[in-house]
Image 1 (tube, rainbow, N blue to C red):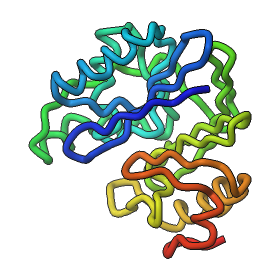
Image 2: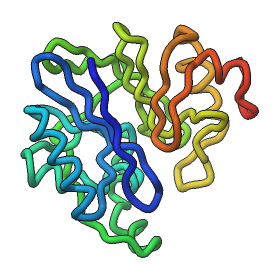
Image 3: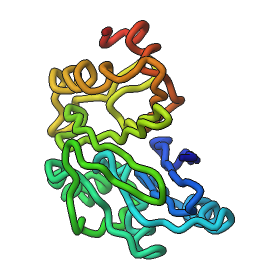
Image 4: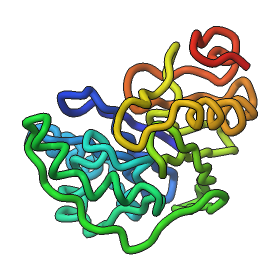
Length: 212
């Protein structure tokens, strides 16, 4: 599996394109707001001869779903989310208005993902792990073959996801990190929804908010 990241929008959100030798790809958390950002995503897919086959959201905060409508309009993909995050997705317009941001409403999911599901594209399989706390339906995607974790806003390099937003739960987030993330191999690369990547081992030793 190969991975390409973009940093989009006023929240500097990391959007990921995952792909393999089949040229099928998955778009995770498209945060593109501007036409320039949308074109950057579209051109990367086109120039690399990729075929988008899934749109995945780790969670449904506005900065992670801002480009869902664009992905649907361009490639016909509806998002796959955890059902517990539907109240968050339903608040997209209201929260965008609160921040003074443009809002292209995400299409409704046609199906949901759950803990333990395996999502496959090309020759690649991603395991779904439910990690609530930052958002009630937050999930992460584990590619075991390469020890790669697409972790959204659960764990950051030297920090953790905020829990002061509606439906956040601090103790639940800490429990998700301890029982779902810190139980992975230390060499697991953690790709974050904001900022640089890290590893499980580094955060277990040095994260000031939650140690192993």
